[in-house]
Image (cartoon, rainbow over all chains, first blue to last red):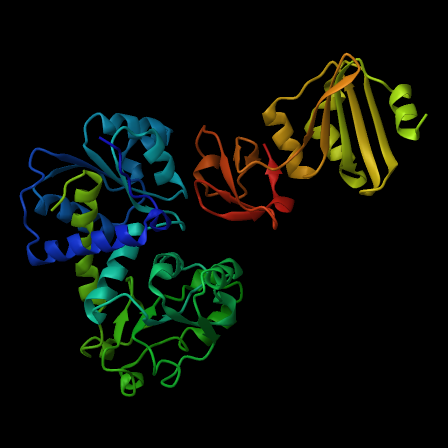
Length: 304
Length: 153
């Protein structure tokens, strides 16, 4: 069987993305399917990520698979100085598939090259987190009825935010229009602006975040502005509340608007937004379960 | 006799390699890159020679030494357009303009300290994503770098 790992959203074609989203839709209709009974899934979290781990492990269990692994490198041999290669080779003796999270960038790519069983990247440092990107796409498609021609506003930390960079890559297939809303210090890096120009993706940029700026948005994708990203803490104090979405800002927005956030949220979305029907971040996280069921079946070569 | 032939006669090699058209300011980078200071064969190094193409150029002649593709690839990273002449029995039997390859295996160090290649005993791999700009992309951490900023292994 051809080994089919999922390492980076950049590897996925438009057709592949759409077929995975279609499969995720089937899992949403019926998440409990006993199609992986007898399978064992290795869940290797070299760095803790409770949210992602629980989502993947729940996906595996709802498909009838059993799960082995660890939730922190401190409890694995990595803490004794074992190489990643040795850990992967050992676990691949036991598991049919490995889901892995690692603090080092490129760890999943390397694992996919040495492992005899497929790898799903559940996050490699600041690099890739394809299941997050897929659940973002699933949430946009589900709420808007399409991925084509959407006006997407990315707000907050656009410099270090892995999710927003992956979204640019994934959406290149679907003719989006972007607005980048961020403080000067956290602007979209030049390489991604070049990427947009090369792929004919129109975008505008602003440091203002107010009702007028978001009036034409179909999707507002909020991210957390993290204190540790600022060299000047005075600057952080100045900007942290400028990129805060409140319920009153939503009165003039489009009816179809949905607000997404990869979570965890801190102060960037006021709690009074939660009860607004345009708030979608909790359902978004739930969609992760269906998307991960689709990814697991795909790498194991199971059509549903 | 033409000037060129005279120059060839003066410094003719029986067997070996002539590396020509090295930008004058890159000559010593190439010398170090090829470990020439450690070589024990006959080596001639010239610099600031007149060149129609470059203005001033450097040139290295090494007796009884032939380079592998890997070694040639390394040269392309510091001096992308040098010319390698392979000499056998006083004849130029091969003339290659060094071109940066599409893939660079275990030649460039990734500058990202969080890249797996800097933390695991393994080869590095870079893809040339824009030849004109000289942009390389790490196969593993997917970070892009300009060839002017890279560090060789």
